[in-house]
Length: 347
Image (cartoon, rainbow, N blue to C red; front, side, top):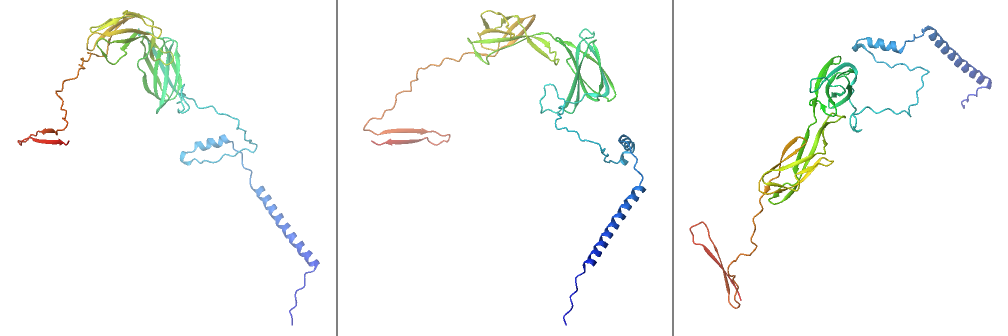
């Protein structure tokens, strides 16, 4: 007998099953909502703490107990558009290139430097420029100020290694810089002496390395006066237009006038002749200065060489039709008899 297949559910039973499933889902949703409401009512609201108070509380704790946490971002915070903002480059040494590291900061602390400027006569030097440099490793930063009353003070400096020098153009400068270590909250008091630099300088040389007796060579002398640069306090020579006299020494003579005037470039020129071999010197005078210039060595002329050919004796010419014999004799340091080698040329 064949088994009997189950009959399909009726439409009424299907509708009843669907209604029961929907009711179960609604009950689960309502229970979940009620649990969230109860949790919200049970949890007290979190107190609002200012960011500054939280930071102060964290910094007051010992270092080993400090905890770094992310600060909350306000809900109304709007990120600004900084795509068009251009930041200023870090400060650099005047005249430096982009490849150099940034300049070292000098201000920003609580240290001070007091400078008193003393001139060659022992009095104050008003209006002098004072350069203050701070060094960190191989880098440095600098500032300058003018000591209008012969003294000055600069405050708000960072501690560290310092170098101070001063000058007053056009003729006063400090020959040596003063270096020291400045404490972070200290004050350094300095007395900087300035020296006068305005002397006339005469420097010259012969424009040839060697020369021979009877030759002439140009001699050039630079006439300059020392001057202190107002920019950096370095002493440099400034060309001077002045009359300069040349006195030749033994073994030399001057072609033309011995008294000339230096041009706009401060150069005086002569033509000097060598009259005797040796290392000679000349004397130059101008603007109250006198210097001796040592010239290049003058050598004697080379001896003359006779161009006539020397007589080497009769030449050996072979006679046609007869054999020619050539003999070569070689000697040695031994006691044996020298050997003779003969070569015969056939006809």
